[in-house]
Amino acid sequence: MPFTTEAAPILHHRLKSVLLSFAILASTAASAADDRQVEPHVAVPASTERHGDWLGMLTLPSQAMLRIAVHLRVDHDGIVRGVFDSLDQRIWNVPLDAVAMTPATLEFTVPSNGSRYAGRWEARTRRWVGTWSQGGAQFALTLAANGPPPRPVAATDAWTLPSDTEIGGILDRRIAQRPGEAIVVGVIDARGRRIIARGPAKADTLFEIGSITKTFTGLLLADMAARGKVGLNDPAAKYLPAGWTLPVRGRPITLLDLTTHRSGLPRVPLNMPFSDEANPYADYTPALMRDFLKTWVPDREPGVRYEYSNLGVALLGQLLARRAGTDYETLVRTRITAPLRMADTTVRHAGGDMRRQATPHDEFLRPVTPWGGGVMVAAGGLRSDADDMLTYLGAHIGLVPTPLKPVMDGLRVIRADGDGSDTAMGIGWMVEKTRVGEIVTHGGATGGYLAKVAFDPVRRRGVMVLANAMTQPGVDDIALHLLTGSPVAATPPPPAAPAIRPTIAIPPAMLHRFVGRYRLGSEQVITIFRSKDRLMIQLIGQQAMPIRAFAPLEFFGTIVPFDLIFHEMAGKIDAVTLRQDGEDKRARRISVP
Image 1 (tube, rainbow, N blue to C red):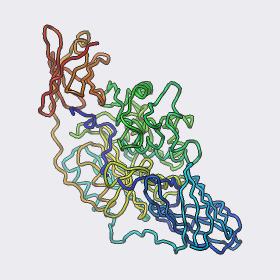
Image 2 (tube, one colour):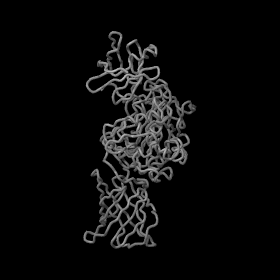
Image 3 (cartoon, rainbow, N blue to C red):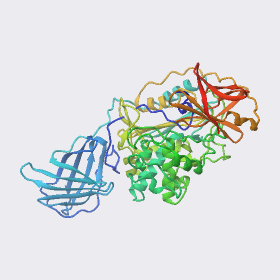
């Protein structure tokens, strides 16, 4: 197909990979690497005959199987207390409540995810045979006596975090031929935190973190679900403002669909006006989002396929803020950044303070405009610094105390497939298979910044890399090398910037002669329309983009490289040629306004 939105640097994050299918345990467990027993809430007196460790298997609707271990102990007052482990999800010590055990029955609840187990003792097989209930669904679960299963232990020889000197050498090589680029690395583990900076940056220099913002949005969703404010499987339309609609195909889009990129919504809305091409979301308003959602026609049911969607997560953030009776920025501050004392993690508004923020650069190392917030803020509008991001990672791995830790643990529970064979989706985060085991990760990119965060929940290590240039290779390879030992990419000189194309002014009154629809092949149509005093182009299923004239009948794309050559006959435009990647495709005009 001709030009595509993928080429536009719009809050995108390229993924590599998927794991198993789907998990039902929205657990809010203790740290995966913390083997201390959690003291659950009070239980009821019961027989001590069958306390101990019990193993079972849950089979989910997707046919994925989860091993469950239930640990029951009787204290000196005769009260049965317990925790359970979800072994395949790497979550342990989830407290049980209302544990009731008699010689014939076993019952308990899991407050963190609203599930309940009820079983009866089968004397012949010496097992508990019962039902696990959660979210309106029921699953058979038989628990057999067994010893405590081994918990994962970090291999001491798997990989050692590099020293500050080694990290500094990597950064020196990365920016050696990149004047103006700043890059900051942060590492946190049980020994403390380290920050290494190169170029015009310090530990408190601010960077846009792009799509890492989506992990904050996911945390807000999980937090509100844990507090009963929303349900993960609630239809998103339930929280829309008056006058807004979401189309339904098969079943409604849920809040979980929005955070796992399975809503079917496109990567970006297709009606972006691009009034400021350097800050593409600046003029995208709630009214434009409402209008797009009202007219958008999905091509499949939600949940069928992974498709990364900035629009979906941006909508989720607006819905959560509306449910909370506030705006997204305030919701992030009150629920996440203020309690964690992350004062430097904020939304920068147009014209806001740039004194501590690194100057952004494009892939050619040309200075560019920083991005603002707006209605798309929940998909990529936060900025932060190294110290705050290490606090955020430290909270996820249990090194920074926070009441949000149980909710954070549930974020990495696998909910859906991701974008490949080695990556799965949690809530807001990707869970990725690596040479040292599973890690949890997310990246971010805006018009002039790159960012990557990743943590290992078993070894309790976290890394982050921030840079103020879109030049590739960027930050992903460095972050993964620090955490897993994967190779660091070679760093060639930055590419030469393309020549600035001259433009001519076409009187606004003359723009209407180009407006219309042009048939391109059997299944595609080019639409040319006017937005204020300029022309826009849009192909079916793609976002609209501005075009500029370099000759009376010739235009070029400003977001994605292509040329349009209009053909005139008897004083009227009757066709256009799309020239892209050395190929010409002619489209005849089929309609006029």
